[in-house]
Image 1 (cartoon, rainbow, N blue to C red):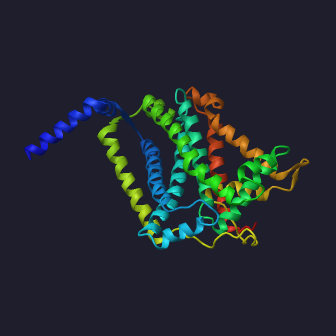
Image 2: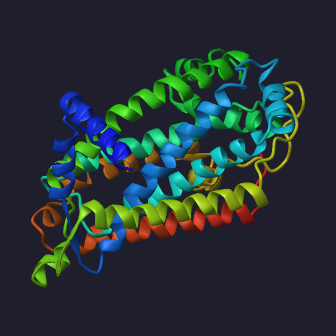
Image 3: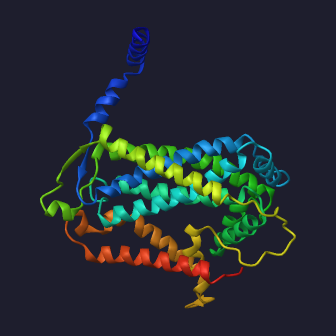
Length: 365
């Protein structure tokens, strides 16, 4: 026993001499988390990060078998699910983790909005968080095509057609998105490169900035709590808050395993570009409210194509979301801003209602 303790002490001294990990330990011990009635929302950021790590780990395992070509993509996924031990489980966890990650990311976004945690000096933290939301949805869109099955193929064809609605530059955007005039093997290769190289690289950079800013500025206290005299106290991040985070992560892992085991990801039929589009094609749930909005718009609005109006409307909404710290001047001063609060609540209700209608109306394409 004494020999093991000596070996561990020597190993710790070796690491300290080369990387100085004690500085990181002191930094973690120095960080505190405010304790108040909204403290529970602080756990959503760590949960989203954990699910992203699960995505990376399972994605790397899938890469060992996946072949990014129209001729072999479907068969490689089929082989993974049928022949590789626990291959079906890894793919199912990857699929469910993607959905749960975007779900917790939306919850994190709206909780930050409602408690006004975007106030200066955390406005740059907000900008990086909105960027991460956009990257997460891009992950979902590009990853959906990779199995090269029937639903993914035609859903991607419909999704990429939206880029072609812009006048003058629409055809160019469509060609760039598809790698040609239609969804082909070139599209699959392009989406694969974006999904496994471009998006992870961009995410790691922005995520690193986001975590640095969170560490620098600490956790925000909502204005309502500040007006009541501030937080009741503080909780040390290490080990108290981190241990609670770990409990949440283990719970999420158990939920992922249960979903993957009882509702495994399906593969469906291989894509056939010459076959007619099957009825009832729908996007992933986090794109459903956009899809339904475009379906409800008339063909022309004030002489402009309805689809173009819808796409431009979503672009303006995205810009509004990004610039919330700049636009909400009352919130920036720590004052009550009921207009922004009701806008946020209205957006949440709109997204929920349109998503529900999208799944109950059984739309066809």
